[in-house]
Image (tube, rainbow, N blue to C red; front, side, top):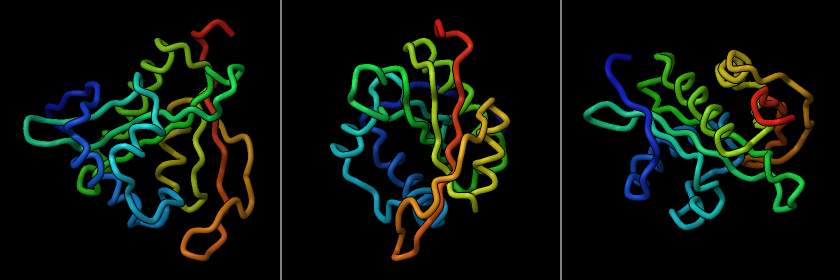
Length: 165
């Protein structure tokens, strides 16, 4: 990738974020979702502090955000990772820059564990997460259905070395 910036996501960028998310949904290997939510639903499901985009002077190439795993206080430092990269920007380092930056941001916000649920067929995402310090902790077999097909989900996690644990 040539010149690009990583920065906090802005609410008005939802159309670009949604389009990249829709590309991921269309692959069938990025999420159980089958359609993009509206802004309010997406916004309510994600932490406010940890939302990033990668862009150049023309457009957004990818986004990353965190979702809480539980509303229970004891899990306030545990979050689930979402990283999506536009199809024409994949394999250009965008995902790695997003995930590394999201890790840094999460630690500044007191997050001590990041987790990711990834379909076993999504080898590029598994490799990306492992290259950023995530480890596989298990496989949740037949966790859910997507378009009537039961899917397994690998659970990966990254424990912070910098957040007082």
